[in-house]
Image 1: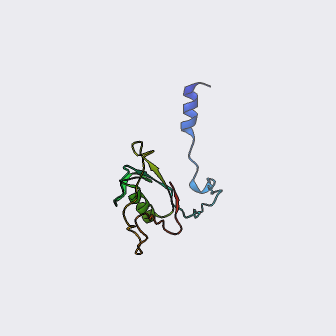
Image 2 (image 1 turned 120 degrees about the vertical axis):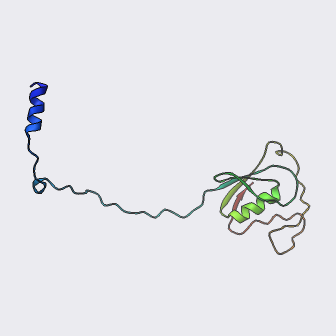
Length: 124
């Protein structure tokens, strides 16, 4: 069969009416599934060995920096859930002296208190 005869045969066909065409049916039913409710764990990097309050600075999704360990713990309490606190290369191995009172709790626990919120899972 040559290409010309094949094209002629194709063009000579008459389209079938819509009523005689087979109906398409979906074989699957789409459903929605509820996912579990949880937050992704955050990673907080401590930048200095001081003991001052401060705020978390977002770097990317789930990654933060904090000026001090106290600021990192306070930030972890505000985020809730599971967090990991790590130390920057310049801070790793240095001594951190706690001298301030806890800033997130109405009770005075003294200068060495780092209060972790109930229900938080914090890894340092």
